[in-house]
Structure formats: structure tokens, C-alpha cells
Image 1 (cartoon, rainbow, N blue to C red):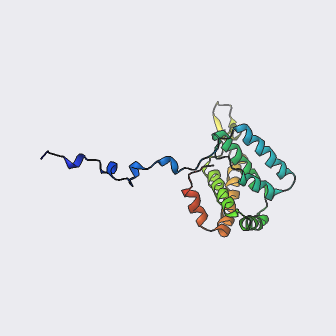
Image 2 (cartoon, rainbow, N blue to C red; image 1 turned 180 degrees about the horizontal axis):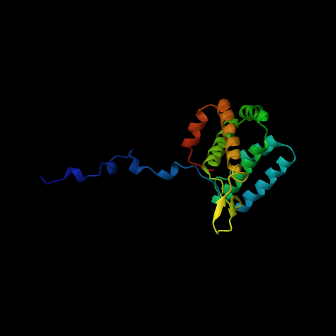
Length: 185
């Protein structure tokens, strides 16, 4: 009888149902690559709807045409477009609009995409541009406390109010679906 060290046997190679024998690429859905120029064109069309007063159409257009296959710059352009749409809608119009979207065909998926954009918007830092810094005669710069630093808080307030209304309508399952989806916005 040969001396076999059973501790060195890789039993995952012997089990066909093992995670080691599973193709992990099948977990992520296929996404088609989209150029940044195409995303910018789409953003222009959506902004045209927004300027025309069709805020619900603009929001639907942004949520139905998500650039999952775009590079980081394209995704940031689309995030800025969605954030601009959300900021242009009055608070009194939020719930009725979300209710109409939710009751339409595919509305549940659209609201899940909106939750993705809300979380993405909340996770990005507001750009700390040089307009918030005032140069001093001493050579040092002083951060302005009034006027310049309030924009980020206002955007966060809008995103949080949208999140509150959306979860009231779509439920907590939307959060779980967003966290388990491998496609990122």
C-alpha cells in the first residue's frame, strides 16, 4: 500500500458541483460597451426633454437608457444628468411621479436603477474646487465658510428626500436588489 497524504488532496477538483469548477463569468450579465460620446449625446437629448418641461419623460429616459458598459467618465456624465433631473423636480411632484413609474410596465426595475443612482450620488464627494478657497495676502488660502460650501449639502438633501419617497413606494426590496446586482452605474 502506497503512502498517501490525504491532507494534500484537493477535493474541490473531484467534486463537479464545487465553486472551483464554476465559471464565475456567468454571474455578471453581459453589457454592451458604450462610448462617452454616445452617453453625452443621450444626456443632451434628456436635457432637451427637461428644458421642454417633461420632467417625467426626462427621468424615464435617463433610467431606461443606463450606460452600464460605459467607462468611468461616461458613467459620471450620466450621473450628473440624473442628478440634474432630480434637482429640477419639485418635492410635491416626487411621490405622484414615482407612483406612476412604479405602476407602469417595468417600473420596478426603473426604480431599482434610480436607487443605484441615489446611492452613487450619495457616495461621490462634491468637488472641492478652488472657488471655495480665498487667497490671503499672507500667501495662505482660507476656506470660505459662507456661500461657497453649501452646494454639496443641498444636493445631498435632494438625494435623501428622493430616497425617502422612493423606499415608501418601492419598498425595502429595492435596496436588496440594488446591493446584489453586479451591474454598476
